[in-house]
Length: 245
Picture (cartoon, rainbow, N blue to C red):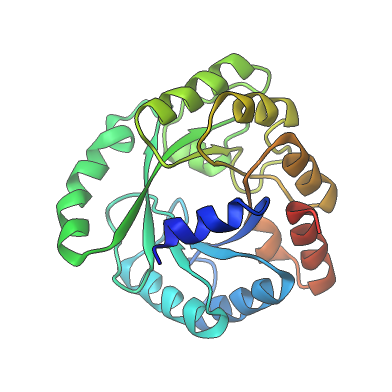
């Protein structure tokens, strides 16, 4: 089974949760332990990536550790074409739709595509849009941030992603954001598109996770919380709220 089909099958049963681990933030062994904790908490898959500091070496080591310790799919969430590994199970082949740098919209993807074809890594096409405050990913990606109250533009991006034939659409407030994507924006985009909607950035409490799920998110991503929280019960509470358990 492909990772894409695995995700779609899980989403068909309800909102899923995905953990985001930055391979530049801790040794691979620790990343593996984090993945194990998140599996025990109920997460469905592990995304591996970061805006800066990701190398082929730490990506490979982290992917190996994640799979060995958790058995969950290791999904590469790339910050660019500079790092690649055959140890990940798939790559989110994404277009940062609101970047002002064409390399993030299409250039890096064109550069990486022949290599992905050569190594046979599963690509999952995804439209990726940065919403205020955007944080580091917004700055590094040179994003023209979607304002929190500009629901019409967010909907338009989602529709464009679907019309391009992309498999997923991701609304990102940025890792460490003080506010997540507004529920009103999530609900409007979800009602407009038929492809799965992923929401991430600033989701650090059960209440925020529940709000995103009830608004219509098909997948909820948490990253900063996982890095900062050593309380397994709190992690479980957030995952359960994301999944409606």
